Length: 430
Image (cartoon, rainbow, N blue to C red; front, side, top):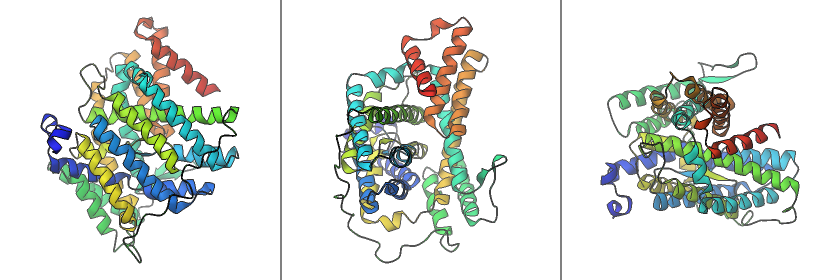
């Protein structure tokens, strides 16, 4: 059955490999079940209902990705977008969370229309090849930085911006042990290396007080969605503020999704010889559908997750990986205390190792041609330094246009890229 649904043999994979990959992806992104409710509940939304909405929206979007696009990519409420939702739209702009949810719903509908008319696909296919090669590298550096921070090995510093973390912190040592173990297993070509590393690090964290075992019931029914389900308001629909909020959600979600899809697909070998992504329309539709359904359920914008790269690194190549990930989220609905006990320091090594895998794409970039190398470099470094995949694409694209334009190579700039660059400039200055 799985062979017919996902064409496993053509992708040189097996059911066992795909399931392990799906579980690995889940383990590296399960934090969203705790983090998303925590962020959005600051707006006055019910935290328990948000847990259910987060899990269900992830399940819907990821199952859609599995069957419609047959890709090993999971989607869930996006980090950064949920912060914009809570801290900017609600706390700074002063709107109720119902207005923000309405804006997310409108954004989802617009994305469905743009996807249907191939606008989003046109944008992705028009991205220069040098930037497509650079995006996986930038994402690799980005998620490596996240992993180093999550385990406490790198911390913020007011004088030097970043610095070495506290080496007396037990989280650091849990992460380092997990990283060493995962690295050894990867070197030995053990396909479940990343998952084994996560589980082992979590177990080591129990006696150290890092992994906290659940108290009370380990199994329970999911909390009710009723406090946040379909709580739309339409009185602000035609205001300037609503337009700004919707456009911001659109912009960040579009290019976060573009970067993630291209980066993960490249590592899974799903990009063709011309640098194009044949299944991009189906993937984008799954993303847009997830956002629309997620808004109805009561959560912020749903987007493809860069942590999917951990499942790809574990051997995932088809939608069965995504289906396995969604299955884990179904289980998590009833075993929330068990899955939420895995600390971020235990999943950090997975992000670091995956970062290594993705950085290897740098060998495809032509560094002898500075009109190609500089835009690629800007893409790579701006992702981790601005903590945003979207901003990396913005600066990479703008540098590509200006350098090509002023070095007599304007013919290499497509009309679509010019339009995108103009929109990026408007975004930066307005």
